[in-house]
Image (cartoon, rainbow, N blue to C red; front, side, top):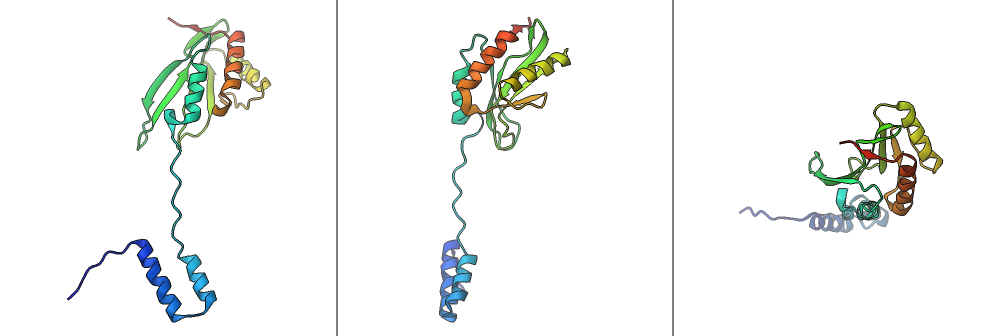
Amino acid sequence: MKKVITLTESDLVKIVKRVVKEQDKSPTTYNKLEKAIQMPKAKSPKSPEGRNNPLWKKLVSTLQYLKYPPKVLTFDSYGRPSIPSQSLNWGTTAGDRGLYGLSIASTDSTSPKEQIQLFNTNNKENQMNMHKWWQSKGYKTNGREIEIKFSDAEKLKENIELFFAKYPPIRVK
């Protein structure tokens, strides 16, 4: 008569260790096997992503009361599984130096960069000047994106206000 039993991975590991221990009393062989058959460590729970990230929530609450408040777009990412996401947008806006857009999006494991997207649709020279302005404040930029840290929400708020003092946005109707 055959019987089917169900073993967990930890049960199987215990059985293998016991068999090896009984067959070979050599401590070096047992220690090598013990290291080879280590139970996988439990993965730490994933930190919240997208608009559920605590640093993002703090950034949004810090930036929502600027003189020029952002338009907040809330959506789910297109990836599978989808991630509840959000972006803060000051575009399309028009200033005395042409049209420009400024946007900050929440991050997730597929798009982990904390950055500002800054572009000028009709004046590339002005776009470069705007990026140079951010560089002068200590930020890294590649001419399209400005590296930021969500954890520096107060500093970012101060710099966005200074940026808008130099490049005030005017909503296009």
